[in-house]
Length: 183
Image (tube, rainbow, N blue to C red):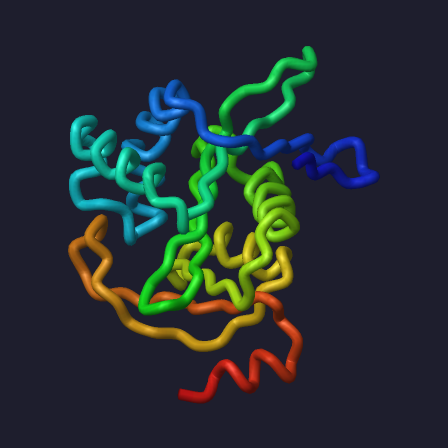
């Protein structure tokens, strides 16, 4: 699936099924210390390639977990792996997770990838979470039509601390968001 706005400055992003070679591109992105710090809830052993490979073998083998590679079209027309996006299930709730190469942050790639992914999957509602100080990820979720539900505290392994985390839900209609806030 491709996402592009009428504005030529917007990135051309495409999602595709994961290829084994994508893991070689994902690993350095997901082992980047600055990106890990910002994400906060990253794996505590993110720089361990064997653990990374084992984790993604499990994820990719799970038919209930849709996973896609995020591709970015470059100026010469070629594509590069820009990141990953998936839905995982926590206590029966679908949660979106995405990771974009830190070198590409701030270009609208995550927002385009989330929009394309939400068109591709049928499961609703979908929840999203971001560290309260991860302003970029908060904007991605808001721009993608997610509504803020609440702020929770959770242990962030990458920061070795309990931090505030904002919980979102999609679709963001006021009636659904109000209903979903109820315990």
